[in-house]
Amino acid sequence: MNVLMELLQNRSKFIDEITDSIGIRKKVVSLLAIGMCSFAIYGFIMGLSNSIMQSVSSMVKLPLLYLATTGICFPTFFIFYSLFGAKTTLSKCIAYMLTSICVMGIILLAFAPVTLFFLLTSKNYTFFKLLNVLFFSVSGIVGVSFFYKMIIAVDLKNSGSSDDSSAAHGARNKILFFWLILYAFVGTQLAWTLRPFFGAPGMPFEFIRKLGGNFYVDVFSSFFRLFKL
Image (cartoon, rainbow, N blue to C red; front, side):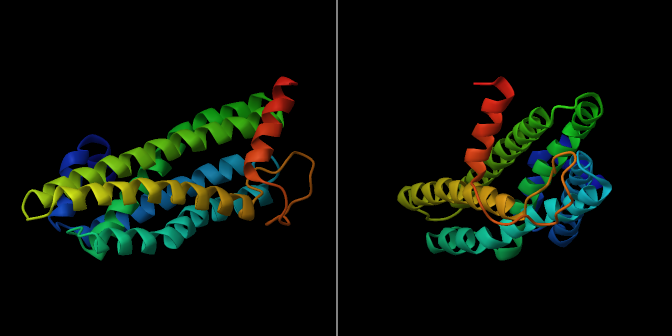
């Protein structure tokens, strides 16, 4: 709980402590627990649109989605970022990334009462699905933006105490930007692979649906159905 309050109310100090290697192990464990519990709670609520089985399934799959996406993309970030002279360690990078993921989970948890409200008061599944896509988009954008600003600030701080060139710093910024795009694409593709997370009312329970279609096509078609365009 102390880690959560520090992250919410004193982010600068929290990040500085990671940079200075203060209590990294405790922070990593706490961030992982907070983030995964937040995703699990939101996944359970989201899956209630179909059944209890779907809720339990989504409660398991949503944390797995974020962990797997990070696991797939993390080596690319760490290797390329280090290759261009970043002054950091593996444990610090893990802590920075988990901080961002935890922020995403907390934002989704903040949206959970709204999601539950519309689940109980609206029978429009298409609206419910698009509402959740919006909430995930907001949490993702905030989390990614937080990670981008955090890494740049840490890099500037570390560069100020070394002979790091401005060209190397600029190269790392570009690597960070393109890596975040990669992270978003991997995450959406993996989410589509692990679907369903909602489950339309009346449809039989499926843990993982057969591959087919496309995430972006499905979102646009749902938008058109909702507004009858």
